[in-house]
Amino acid sequence: MIDPRAVIHPGAELGEGVEVGPFSIVGPHVRVGAGTTIGAHAVVDGWTTLGQGCRIFPFASVGGVPQDLKYRGEETHLEVGDRTIVREYATVNLGTVGGGGLTRVGSDCLLMAYTHVAHDCRLGNRVILANGATLAGHVTIGDWAAIGGLTAVHQFVRIGEHAYVGGCSAITMDVPPYCTASGNRAKLYGFNLVGLKRRGFTEEALKELRRAYRIIFRSKETLAQALDTVRGSPEYDRPEVRAFVEFIAASERGVTR
Image (cartoon, rainbow, N blue to C red; front, side, top):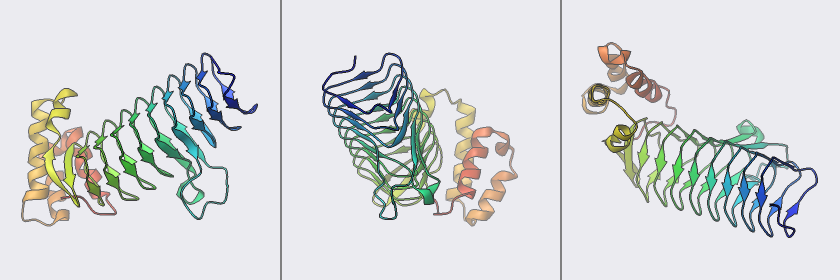
């Protein structure tokens, strides 16, 4: 159902079964997948593609121009996967030319009220941003990661898959996969064991991840030496350990510890 009070540009493309509530605005370059719902007073603008079965709640702003003073109206894009939920007053911005021209939010994500996803961010699948969490530009978040409410993430920071960040935190350095981080400035507090067990990680996998963690963050070796030690260990053959090690090795901002 398209409410007659909605403003939909003729150039917008709406899939089968799309619903648009009263006083919403859908811009000329927007493509909306089948079964998506756009609530009252929401704005979907820019070169934005929404997947199937998404829910955009009232007063959300999706596809707005970047909060970047260098932006001059260039054609840049936002892509949102299937079944992602964007709650009230959340904002998700287009990319910038300097950042690759694309902001991407994966499938089955939940962006709670008042969250902000800035230009050129990359969010994987099943990412959760709790109320008031804010991402600066160029942030990358892996699948299944969860960010607590009122947390701020510095630009260019990476947060690994299955990581959990506590509320009211300030994240200025990368958070490795599978870990829990919290505080201002954030520190690591071991692994996200509750989340990992819920997602089927075996006890053997958790045991080997703990060994790698102790070598990297608790030994007296330098970080480079510790990474090489883990690479030479039997644990490195496990995909989870390999992902953990190589994420840390690839860090450019430094790793939360």
